[in-house]
Length: 85
Image 1 (cartoon, rainbow, N blue to C red):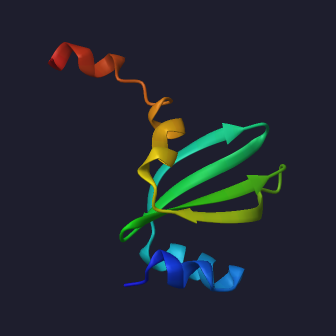
Image 2: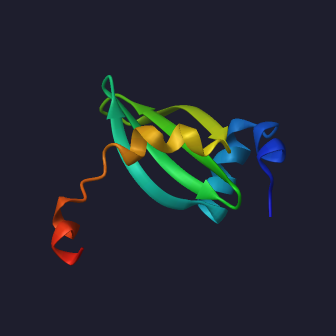
Image 3: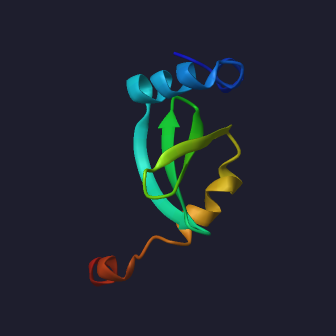
């Protein structure tokens, strides 16, 4: 499996291939008109930023700091689970 350090030195096309092969989709959010898709790969996460109607991939950002997941956790609606508690 690939590490975050190995992932970050790959070319963008290679990073996309790694995401397709090993990535697990977790969440999608919007930020200032940009769609941000979160994937998990082994022990790290990757955000893929898409812009415009054609959903052009404009940037990839890998990280392993779970504090960066807070923006996603705030968007999860747990109200439907309350009746289970």
